[in-house]
Image 1: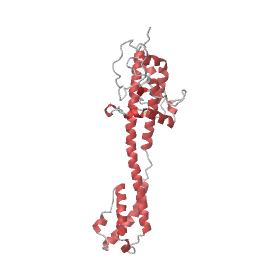
Image 2 (image 1 turned 60 degrees about the vertical axis):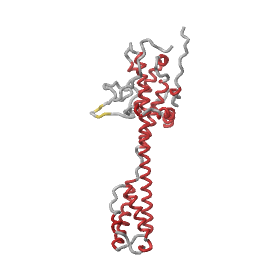
Image 3 (image 1 turned 180 degrees about the vertical axis):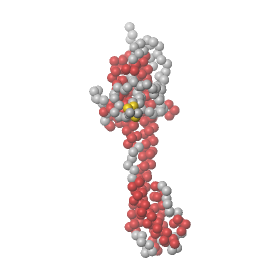
Image 4 (image 1 turned 90 degrees about the vertical axis):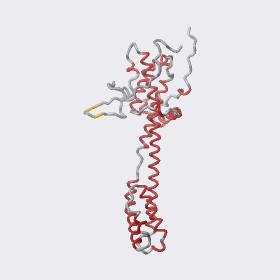
Length: 304
């Protein structure tokens, strides 16, 4: 009689089940549910070495549908899977968490990568103000109040940052001799203040765009990490099911490919959030090959 106690699930695989009702689709998970799933695996994801990361080419919603299908269909095999030698235990509980984590990371990439850009609008507003003050400086330079070479450097700034810097420099030049030039050109302090206000708004918008670019790069990296975890764990599930169902040859019915195949209609590929839970059979290999899961267990070798 076999009395050997089955080994416990490793600590780093002890994840809570996603806060989604058993009858609910992973595709309908709320923002809170996806965020909660990501928080569970964030520390583990950050610990992945860069050289081990897989190239990202998943459709998150489609992957969620496939994972949901696989978890439901593999439920009767759960006990046998956990008894396989070298098989990562608890995958049927872990995979939904990883799938939701990928969707959370993707949503952060989408939202961060499309910030509201006020710079074109602000550039349109500041251009006539800047040109008016620049014309005043050129008149004052021709009258000997300012160095013509200095004033000449204010012409034609090319980028947003240069426009902000030039406007700040022009304002400083005006204020440096304001008492001497106050009645020499039709420029008022109110106009100078208005230029400064718009320049400050441009500077703030530039800062927001730069921060968004940094945040976008951060989330792209995080998405790649959690997707790598999902791809590798799903490949392990496929390997386990393939071993258990090797005689029947129906592994694909239990754990279909996580990659979305190109579905063409009228010559156009249709991919996206509307992918069905049960994916169509693929006639091409995925861009990322399944990560090797180590030496395959000998036939009949199980954990006692």
